[in-house]
Image: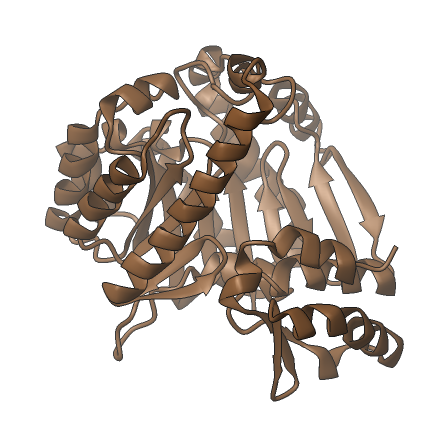
Length: 377
């Protein structure tokens, strides 16, 4: 069992996080799709022997591809690789790309799950993020996907905007819940140094930043309480899936990352993992296409050590509700983990049960520091 990730980095507007424009890439969509198809061929000797249970088109806005380009991509993919009949096939979309025609066209593709970067239902905060869509377009997009027969919709939300109140965050959550989406991911807005977003807030006083951090914790607490009360399973730090006795709405593809399942990454900057090695393609799109055109996969590879695999387990599996099954670790890492975890178990931020160590609700709020303590350096 394995997964396929296809990286499609197209956008029309300036990114508030990195500050780069990617508009010109729209003119090269045909060539990029050709390159993806060629990379599938180049890597088929190793990966075509596997059976794939998930396919994920992400990395920006795959919905910027035309339906004919998406059809070509899937046709090539299904010809070269063995994708299971009941595979989860996800495409990331911008809400404003979900026209009636596009939504209807998805029914002709093997797509059965859509993930949308809604971020917020506040138009002013969407403008702050330089997002192209409006809140009403996000709501309409969900309706159009339903009409097209997509019954597994995930949306992303953000919280912790400058000057955002707890009541405003609650309004975002209430709107999301009213849409009855099957899956929701929520992330605190991060201020990465050197980005336009960081530059906007870097002059704030330390006391203001501390208050915002405290409020962000309250927002996360509200997120957990409201979604669990509405019947969602909090199965990973930032992810919630609707509870259904007949069907699992957890993201199976993301789950493969957290469980250490191999995955093939296609496209510029895409990562691949086969348990023994990790490989990543060059990030520059032009250089990627030029290399693929020459019949080369422009990638670097890392041979994974036992210690690297242990550390990967800490920062992936510990994010999940189930936590880490420590009996599957090598003895020396099992002993190290149990020793390092003692303090956190005593503090009530980690719990140990039936051969597993997992974060408690209290531990979710300090998960980064816990992981730092458990990593072997």
